[in-house]
Image 1: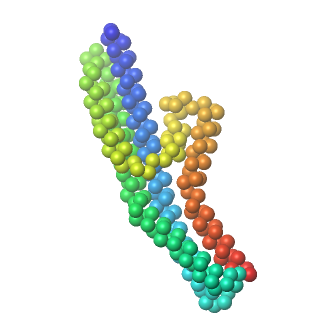
Image 2: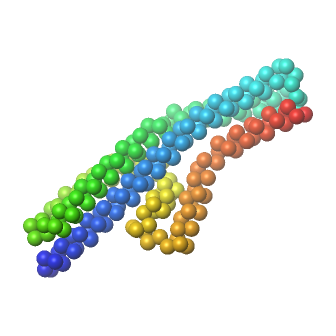
Image 3: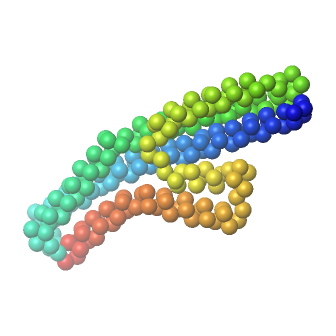
Length: 216
């Protein structure tokens, strides 16, 4: 293989490595954002459900409304208190905020490593006669693999929707044509709706209970 072919091959390998880094950086960023939203929505849901249960108790105590009898109200309150306990447990156990910070840190680290690779690519391009060394590529590949291993160990809440959103933001890497763009958008929207659907369902059901109780 002559010098020019070696250079082109090395640039292609650097380019592939850079694409992997950018994809994981974007995916990690979206994972971080999603987990932050989960932490916020879980906290808001706990607060609103507690207020709703309190409102039901006060309405029952002051004989406001009356769409349900005392036994039904007791069951409803018990159910929503269980919901509060579940969300409180999830906030503690899943540590959305903590893992969000980790994903954000990995996103930054992969981005910084990508910038190093880009700098190396330009340096190799302008000084290709002196800088064509396999060890340059292997060095960054080792850094990437080490960081990827740490990322895989921490990314316990992997979610396809994050990857789809990363692909949508990197059309130059994934050859995203119109039909594929539409399909990826539909998938990203579907998976994100599925991921967050429990919050509106719980709050809507509680709202229905309160309005039914007051309006009867």
